[in-house]
Every structure is written in C-alpha cells, then in structure tokens.
Amino acid sequence: MNFRSNSEMARYYIEKLMDDGEEHSFPEITDYVMANSEGREIKGPLTIPIISNSVMKVICQEKGFYETTRRGCYRKIDAQVNGRSASLRAYTRAMKILQTTKAELKSCFKISLMDTEIDVEAVKDMQKCGKTIGSWVELAQQEVETRLLKIQSMETEEETEDPDMTLNM
Image 1 (spheres, rainbow, N blue to C red):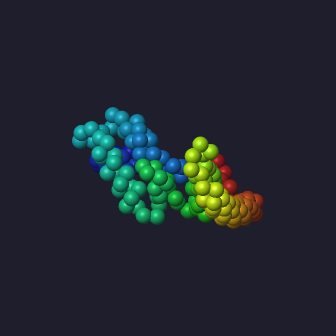
Image 2 (image 1 turned 45 degrees about the horizontal axis):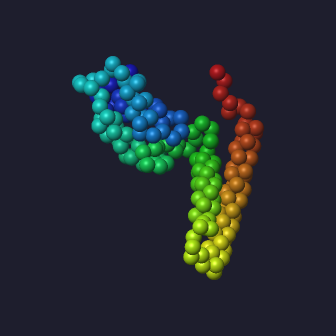
Image 3 (image 1 turned 90 degrees about the vertical axis):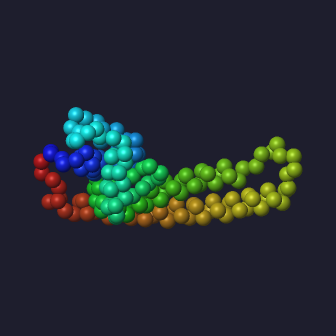
C-alpha cells in the first residue's frame, strides 16, 4: 500500500488494529504502528507525536465508531464486531462493572476491630447501608444477567434460523 504521509500510514495501521473490536492501550497501538511501518517512513521518521495525533484523528474524531474504555484505552464499537452485537457487549461490560463494584463495596464497609473508639450505632448503620447498597447491586446484576441471556438466545436463534448466512471459504 502506498501512503502519502506518515500520518496516513499511522491512521491505516490504527484502524487495522482496532478492527478486531478488542480493547487496545495507547502503548499497544504505538507498538503495533511502529512494528508495521518499520522501514516505510515517508519524509522523515515516524514519531510518537505523529502516532498520537493519528490516534486522536481516528479514535476521537470518528464519533460513534470508537469508545474510550478507560484512560488511554480504546475499542471499536461497530454494530457487529466478531459476530457480537453492540448491546451484548454493553451488557457484558455492565456486568463486569457491577462485579467490580460489588467487590469494592465489600471492602469499603469493613471495620477494623483495632479501632479504639468504636461507635456501635455507627457500625450498625454502616452495615445496614452496606447491605442496602449491596442488594441494589445484586438486583442490577440480576437485571443485566436476564438481558444478557435474552440477547444471547436471540443471537443463537438468528444463527440457527439462517444457515445461508454462513461464509463459504
């Protein structure tokens, strides 16, 4: 492939990497672009600032196609990536967030018995609050799990209903 600039080449390799729909960190993107463009630089070396600007153009300016999953990490959110629907990915991500939240909540309401000034009423109030919030998280998890199962069963039905949609290679 012939590129007119290092930026164009970087954008091409960024898009190529992101096509898998998986999360990729900025260092991973940089390494991939550098490895694939080695020896093909145009009008000077391919630098980190060029790659950074290319990431901004591809990820941030193409609204609706990419998401920032966490600081410095990105993922393509095309409607169908790897055969998984966007809603399935969203609910799967929500479930992971709820599981993490549940674990963090458990540690947040623990009280050390080494505290010299333990207020029994405050401890009871904290336990009650922790249980209430925990039950909300449980309800949310159940709701997400129900929706996940529904989406998965719908996708399974679609796959079995239309055998002509398979790729013949």
